[in-house]
Length: 538
Image: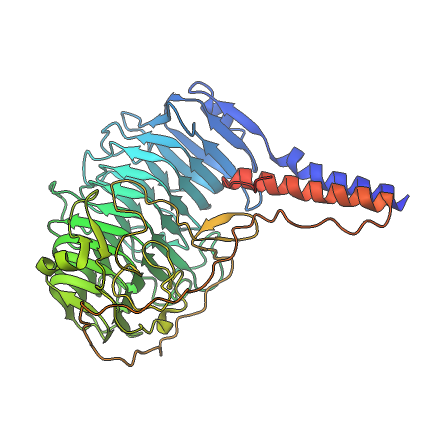
């Protein structure tokens, strides 16, 4: 009797959530608004190829375990969402949306002045994922924005998108410091040919809890993106490729930080490639072709509180790094390759083991010292940019502090700049396309993630007492590196498929065990389907 009850319970546990939560809904241009009006947690809405009118998501409330997915075709003719010509409203509007993924959509602004591509402006909007989407024709004016948030929000993941030719690529937060954007991940995107910012994340006034946010300090990670500007005029003022503003001086999110790594910043004729205030860590990026300053860290709307700049390659810049404002939590410039007219200016604080040189000297140091995407190869030539081991322990709280631009382990940590090696570049050569996912992968127990970024727990507050002992000591670029160590070994990208069934002590227990394993397997597959992962091969 007990065995039958056990088996029945397992069957109910396995089937009930799927029956109650998951629906596969099909939509056409004629039916999309009707379908969206019924969407609920766990639903997948698949748009057929075609041309769609703008739409809003109102009260689309997915959950962490049952998100809502709205997707166009993964290949072939796209699902294109068009701006209203009025415009009456923005092309995709979020007003009450949680744990929603938008995937494989083309959002066409149709050169309509004032129509944003994706806008979050209503209450209770958080944990939005935007991936494999393309935003075009949002550049009638510098004030046209492809992705905008004007509501307190958290937990966004913006990955593998292309934003081409917008007035402003992404504008997250509000100009007056309200509507904070926190705990986000912006990765593997291409931002190109914007009139103003490729991306701006606004400074924050003191505020209360942000909907959906973790309790305690969090971080916003900006990694593995391509930020490109051209020479077109900026009628409303020149803008950096990326600007991040400070977090509030007190209260919620006051101890947050930005981590910016693995990106390519290319070309700005009138402004910086990156400007930041607040608390920021910048490592393993490529900064190329800027008339002024590549990395400008300073008081802006809020003070510069901490500045960590390590293992970056800067080539063809007026000034490589400028730090001003005497950050109260300290600053450090360590292990960078700075091939600029002026390597470092301002008050950089602790400096150690940076290679400096002029842009003209780069040809002897780098694989192909070109400023053009598709031609540049900034990997060190044999025997270049090596030296004694760096001390990176001060940065151990950073995500992927010990992985280089190619996501390869830094091993003995003897190289300056964004690459941990010399000779032939084993990784991706920068082009105007999405940077591929890193080959080094880790597991979160079900989803294989790029470079192991999982923020399930609040991060510890920064240690303001960290200092670096080494004095400024530019390294002779001709020093040959010793053999690098093996470095840390990543865990297997296992998908949680190897759990053995319980020991078989009887027919009933054996059946129950098989059902339990099958049930877990079905949930595993369903989880991957919702998250867009790939289950283990059988």
